[in-house]
Image (cartoon, rainbow, N blue to C red; front, side, top):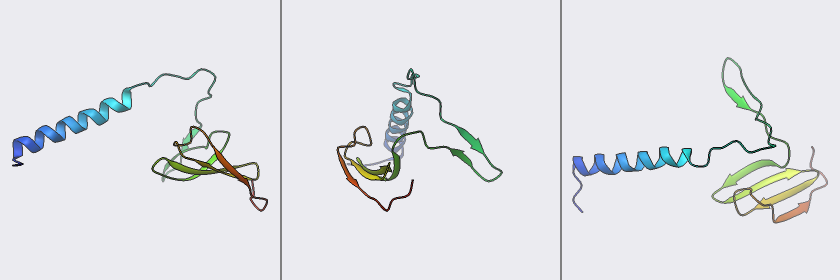
Length: 92
């Protein structure tokens, strides 16, 4: 495939438009969910972790989290936590 400037600009614009539109889909307020607590310091903005499982690390669709002396594993971006195991030395 021959890539020229016009083709490059067309593909870039289409991809950017798709990214921008994807972020707008389904942005409605969920009833009963309190807003995130946010704040800022002179050096950065922050958002406090919502109540529930603290998500420690994530890669692809897999996420590790912890709460109440257990470690959890999600295989669907934290929508469900199908695997868990007790971790007694865990603080918090």
